[in-house]
Image (cartoon, rainbow, N blue to C red; front, side):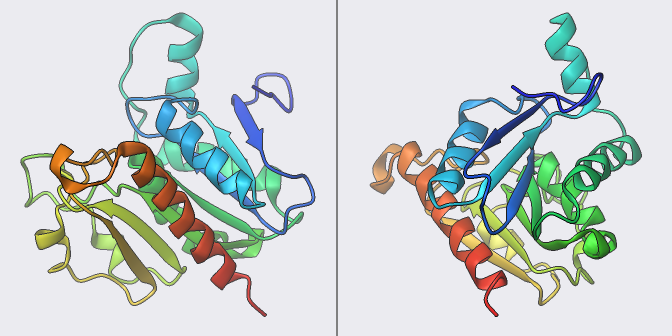
Length: 218
């Protein structure tokens, strides 16, 4: 774990320093930046040659320090924390921002306003389209007009947005969906589908790698 300055958000960095782009990833609501899922995504992208920065939102950093639980901060504070990470990386190379579930959602809400800082794309790993069991409480308003190229990797049976429902939503043309067969919100598949969780994690990292490479084509 690396802190770039005193009191800075906890960060972890993978991949080559000379990479052509940096991917800034935030964690989901309940698990930290070094969860098995986040580690698999970071290692997979780093293995493909990208520099990957993971960081923690303030509430998760407090939880790590105190050992006590705590709910996520409200969206404006999460956005501010993400924008601070973008500012740390701005100007060095193209940026792709995103994350797991809530982290990806936060990234998608600030992506269009971050182009001047070098943000070229957004990566959402399991987007929380709605709370589980509440399909009418959609979190898609900003996705209708999103102009930043965005990849959403989603499990077909994700309780936060199943394929049959999501394919009926009005989403911006800049958004591309990549579906993982019979996978849940963390990309864990059913036993009968023929894929393992590790294979789905690798497939998600490969899909993200292809997305980034397309973004950077001259």
